[in-house]
Length: 292
View: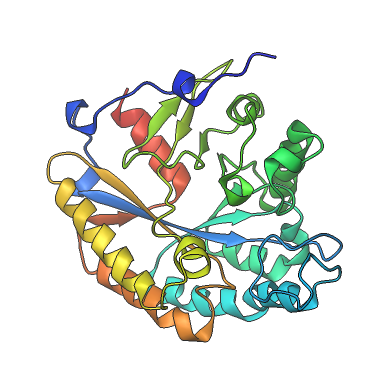
């Protein structure tokens, strides 16, 4: 099978050479906040660990690490939800298809607030390890459609994982945008074997997994880095719009000792009247119209 390589899907485009992007109402940039809701299967090795087993390996059941994640859905999410309500921000919910029913109160809270639902795999598993990728994508889409009344338009792979075919399958199954391609501060179009699919800017840098679990920074690093990234992108946007993503997982930034730094970062950004807080699908629709 011939694979479409990443460089075959996207043309190189220096950002200073592009046509000017204009947001409505004189706004300069968009911030979108993505909350990841996952269901970890206790019959499999945990996707991430906070505590290494005494004898190593991947024991099953792995109660300490399963419970670490479960805290986020039982407690951490509801802590995060308060700040979204206070600041009047609609987030994008990147959710495993299986998690929609398993954590239905979370799904209901997001739906009642008009949040966007994004496909995030049916379970929290690398897409390369899924037995049938198209089936997994369809199952996720249909789980969201059944609960929300409409299919999701955006996709975020678990751990940003893709196979060689993922963009093709997403386009064929009705998705409008994908967030796995973290390579720009503006949306860009990816080629597929049928129609293009839009890449909406996501982030690995302002992502609590990278900052807290991989780089092992102190909790305050989230606030510092998020504000620094925001201020630079705001400066960059003086002549053409920029998009910033901010990523949280309830079991990470919803932990008591970290939560304040997420809240303070959002409070700082909310002070700017010329900054929009949108969902991924609103960014998609604006860009398609603005770049037509």
